Length: 374
Image (cartoon, rainbow, N blue to C red; front, side):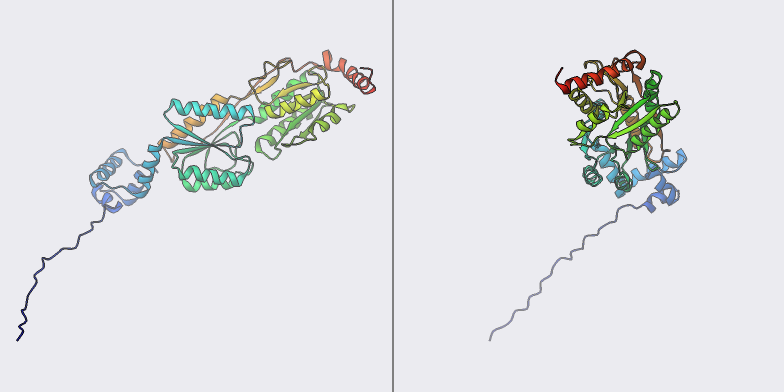
C-alpha cells in the first residue's frame, strides 16, 4: 500500500512593500505654520510674502524634500542656460546686427542663444517657438511676425519668460523693447522738407506691420504740416520683378519725387540698383535716406544717409528685462521705447542747390539717351 506522506511547506511571511507618499504642499504648510496660499505664493514667486514667513516655507521645503512638479520643471529650465531667439529674417542689416548683439550678450552672460526664423509666416513662427519650448529654453526673445497673436498665446500658456522686441502690441502679457518709429520717421522726413523737398516717396515692404504703420503716419503727418508737400508710398514685394520698371515710371513723371526714404537696407539696395538702371544719380537727381544702417552705407558713392537704430541698446535692454523676469516672474510689465539717430551724409542734397537745378537736365539727358545722341 502506498502511503502518502503529508508534507507541510512553511513559507516565510513576505511583507508587501509600502509605498510612502512624498511630502505634499499641505505638509509644507503644516510644518511652516502658514496657509496653503502662502506656500503657493512662495513656490511660484507670486504676491508679497513677509521675509520671515518665506524663510519658514523654504526651511520646511528643504527639511521635507518637497519638490512639486512645477518647481522641478523650473529647475530644469534654469539649468539649461539657453535662450530662444525668434526673428522674421536676417535680410536687413538691422535684424542681422540685432541677432549678432544678442549672441554676444549671451556669450558674455554664460548663455547659449538658439535662433530660429519665422520667415514672416505666423504658422511657422508658432511651430518653431513650440520647438524651442520643447527644448526647455529658459526664456524667449521674440521679434514677432505681422500676425503675432497665435504665437503670443502659445508663449503665454507656456509661462516661459519672454521679451518682445521691435514690434509692439497691445497684448499686456509681455515686456516690450521697441524703437520710436514715429519720431524716427518724423526726423527723416523733416530733414528732407527743411532742405526744400516737397515730393517725397517712402518705399516699404510690409505695410501691415505695426512699425510700418507708425512710420507711414509720421511720414504723412510731416508732409501735411508743410504747404505744398506730398507724401507717396511705394510697396516693394519680395521677388517683385517689375520694381525697376515701376520705379523708372515714377521717376520719369513731371511730378517725380525729389527725395526717397527706404524702409530698410534690402529695399535700399533694390532702389540703388533701380536708380542706376535708370541712370538717375543720387543726390543730383534724387536724395536718399535708408531706414537702416548697413555696414556699406559709408562706402557707397555718395555715402548713404541713414536712420541709425540703437541696436546694442535694444539688445541690452531686452536682455536686462529677461534676466529680471527670471528673478521676479510676477514683476510689473515694462514697455521701453528707444530713439534712433538720423545721420545725414552726401546722399541728401538741398533742393535749391542741386535737385532743382538738375531736374530739367536729367530729363533732357534721358531724352538724349533715348534718341541715341548720348
